[in-house]
Amino acid sequence: MSEAERLAWVRSLGGGQTWTCPVCHKVFGMRYYYERHLKCHQAQKDHQCPYCSFRASYKWNVKSHVRNKHRDKPPPP
Ligand SMILES: [Zn+2]
Ligand SMILES: [Zn+2]
Image 1: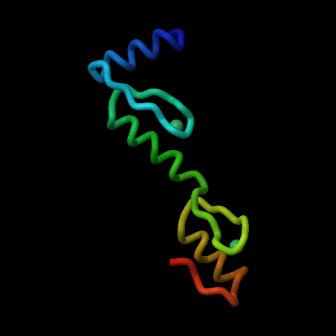
Image 2: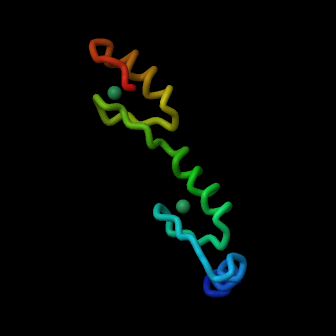
């Protein structure tokens, strides 16, 4: 299936409406799949340590990082 064919197929699923992922620009024909797909980007290290460049997949990773590496700083909310 070519990309053009895939896009035509995707559009046909959602009655013409499509959703494009703002992160990787993948096109979805159904909102359900689009929203489910967005979660896969959110799961990618989008929790940033407020005190250094450390990033983690989960908030609690950042919290434990702050507790271990920035003992003099208050933990992030
Ligand atoms: Zn994406
Ligand atoms: Zn840090």
